[in-house]
Image 1 (cartoon, rainbow, N blue to C red):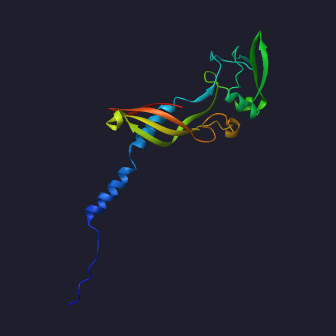
Image 2: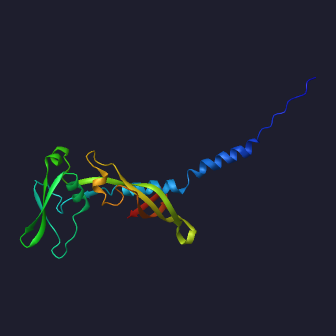
Image 3: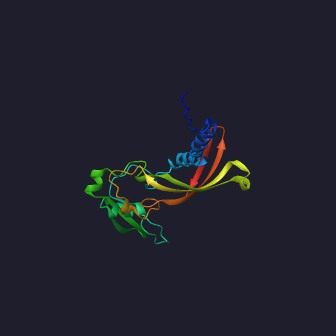
Amino acid sequence: MKPMKTMTTLPFFPCFALLSALSLSACGPEGNFEDAINADLASKKKCWNIASSRQVTFPIAVNRNFLEFEDLDPILAGLEAQGLVEIEQVKNGYIPADKIDLTPAGERENIWTDGEGVCVGTPEVVEITRYTYGDDGQNENTAKVEFTYQYTDLPSWLDRDAFAAIPGMVEPDGGVAEARKSSDGWHARAWF
């Protein structure tokens, strides 16, 4: 009779438990928070528009604040740097204004959409960096969530570097959200 070979195997239960723990750790609250924050951010497209949001014919004159000498809006500055608009500072009576005209490249790219203006992207979560449950960790139905975001869904004509003055355009930037759990999942309100 030949001696029987023995085979060392790991018990089934510990292997199953280890695999279950690993798979659950990938599905932690970060994914829930990311989904909830992205749902809120989807409605926060970064756009420049005139106050009335009416149909426009270029060139247009946009008044600046009479008492302040603010910088040019970063979207307008990016459009000008990319050669899609020409901007000239003019006076509208006594009020400083910007006269904005589309260049042939701006017309060709059809950068203006009535009702929206010029949109350059939608913020999207890059990473959940920190979260704290409410009531000093005792309430797992609310959380303060810190995250980084970057603009996605960019128009084909956009060069990120020309719009570098917009936080989150070239490099991820930070944001904060309040998240609440309800019967239909997590919901968040984010700001940056």
